[in-house]
Image 1 (cartoon, rainbow, N blue to C red):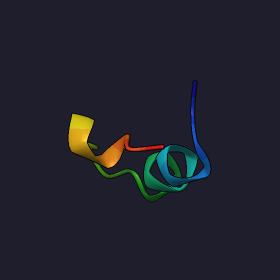
Image 2 (cartoon, rainbow, N blue to C red):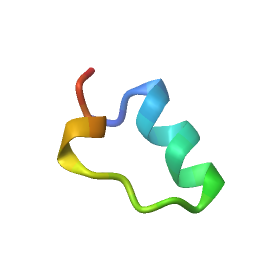
Image 3 (cartoon, rainbow, N blue to C red):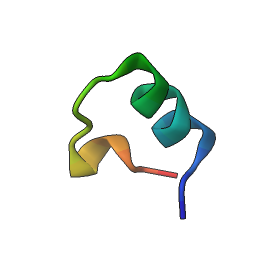
Length: 23
């Protein structure tokens, strides 16, 4: 379940934390 935030973060090549997955 990738939210737009997660997809944008992945496109940036940044390692996302669980807190980033708030959507």
